[in-house]
View 1 (cartoon, rainbow, N blue to C red):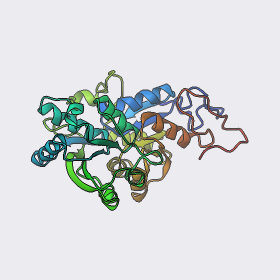
View 2 (tube, rainbow, N blue to C red):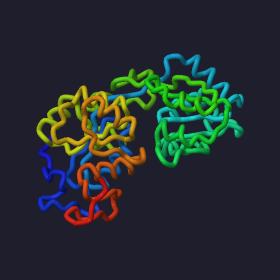
View 3 (tube, rainbow, N blue to C red):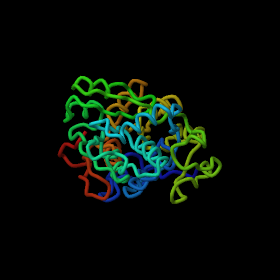
Length: 324
């Protein structure tokens, strides 16, 4: 790894972040597999940061394909009033199920079935698959937020999710009168997943660690030892926890983090990180690449406000209080 630009959280020697590139020179660690990291990496580059990847978790197809097939067939037959989707990885699992039946996911879901997404990233994944999304919570993009704003009645709900998903969403919907059928859509595993079960195009491991595993071939991917060294030497400004499972692995693999700030994708991830003894510097208000970059800016420039990449941000030496 080359010498870092040690500008620190102030962004430049004078302590004033560039209004257009507020993360100039900051090295940010993304704890996703390379194929899932590129969208966030692109936003970080726009803000002037240098993104690096440490793959910690991955996704494998559900081991009980029979249960998933039964639920998916019931979905296609119109059994459910609602399909509730809580992650973009679930969309990938459902898309594969539709492909096995030689149809698009959008064609498999009946018009009578309404679709809910937990947040904007999941909504975007569904829309990319051609699926109309009828409901996304406005106030909080989490299980609690979806439950609090739930518009459905006592109908049948299909909830495909990760094997390690907390029962909060199912219990919350059931408390609202819904009859919820949960099914494992995929398994969260330590990186790398088994190539024959991975829910993404397989990437050669030797190429990954050579730093050529991203979509554009230039996204640096670290080994765990290299990431620990970067943390110890103070080269990393922040690490992004994009799921509760990633927060657990960050604690196990990288702590103590020293000056490296932890940024969480949502409240559930932040809570898991704090339960593991990590201090969360900022939590994204939207679970999107733009939302994560805004949270990183808040973490590194607490007085600079919540400005997205490419927009004007306040002078951090201004007397006006900033967004914390």
